[in-house]
Length: 177
Image (cartoon, rainbow, N blue to C red; front, side):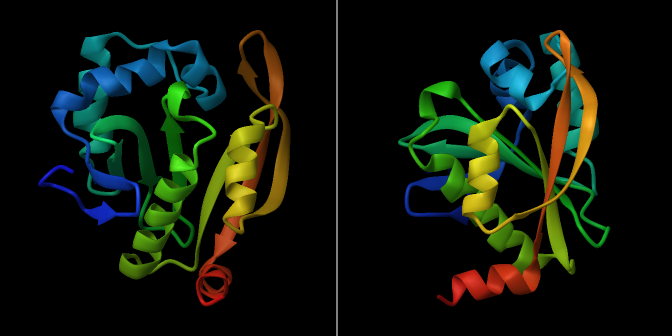
């Protein structure tokens, strides 16, 4: 675990994104297995470094590297901490899919947000075809709140964006079970 760990779970630790993480972040903008389900724009290393400096280091966002087994395996983030419902964004390297790391990391982030941010709930969105992401959210207690039909052009076709929400009281109820 890094000495800058902010959140620790059973198998994952979350720490702030640093400039040295540009190669990890760039993979989300170049690797089709990550970029397409995430809807990322293609960016070179220079653009990725600028993205880190402008977006990730912004006052209104919280972006964390997920580490497991001594390796960087993904990113979890909260966009726009000031509104009533901040937005969650996350992605994980394909070789770590289906092993529960994503569920644990997003759960840790949700718990952190509800302990440290005055918000009534959190929001997340997933493309309709991204069954893994939708299942992760539903497994954590998120409710589908709406669908923007054919809202994004991804990999050659228009796809639906499914919106999910989780209220603080709903999260608290699942944590007391």
